[in-house]
Image 1 (cartoon, rainbow, N blue to C red):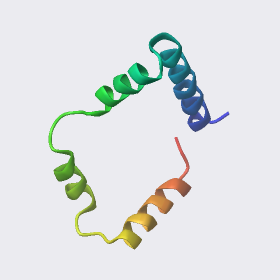
Image 2: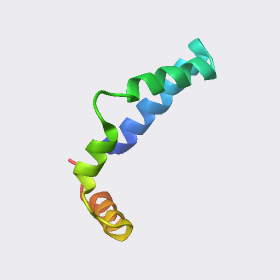
Image 3: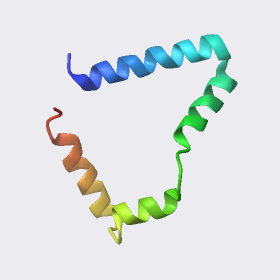
Length: 70
């Protein structure tokens, strides 16, 4: 089993626990609060992708997906 599968299993199990304890609505709110982060996400996205067009972004993501995970 690779780490991606393990990570997915943990996320799935965690989500089930959250929903069981909090209910779907509160579990969703909890996750959204965790994902908010700090700072200006629009600026961070722009800094990361720069002036890349959709084809360049797609290509970079596909390249990333095919790299072996450590």
